[in-house]
Amino acid sequence: MPEEVLFETESKTTRADIAAILRNTADKLDAGDAVTLSAGNDSITLDPPASPEFEVKVERETKAGQTEGELSIEFEIEWNEREDDDSATDGTLTVE
View 1 (cartoon, helix red, strand yellow):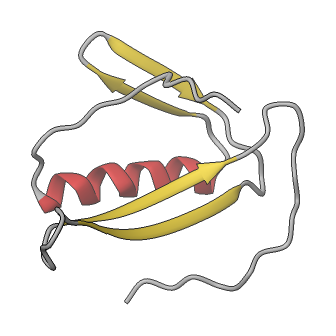
View 2 (view 1 turned 180 degrees about the vertical axis):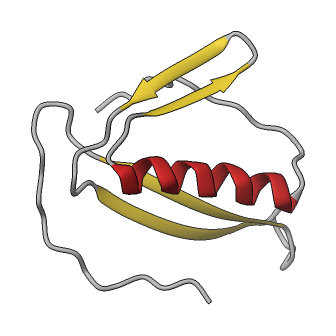
C-alpha cells in the first residue's frame, strides 16, 4: 500500500521540549480529545480511536563497515480510518 505523508517536521529540540510535546499528546489521548499537530504553516488534527495499535521501535542506522551510527526511538500510533480495531496486544510496554 502506498504511503502518503500528511504532516512531517524534524528539528533539533531539547529533551525538555520533547517531553512537553509527548506529555501534551499523552494528555490529549488520555482525555479522549483530538490531537492537533502544527509546525509553521502546516497543521493536522487527528482523532485516534479508543484502542489504536501502538508500536515502539528502537533503530540503529549505520554506514557499511561501521558498528556505531544514528540511534532513534520511534513511537507510532496506528489505526484504520474506516474502523475502530480493538485488536489484542502482544504485551504491556513500560518505560523506566
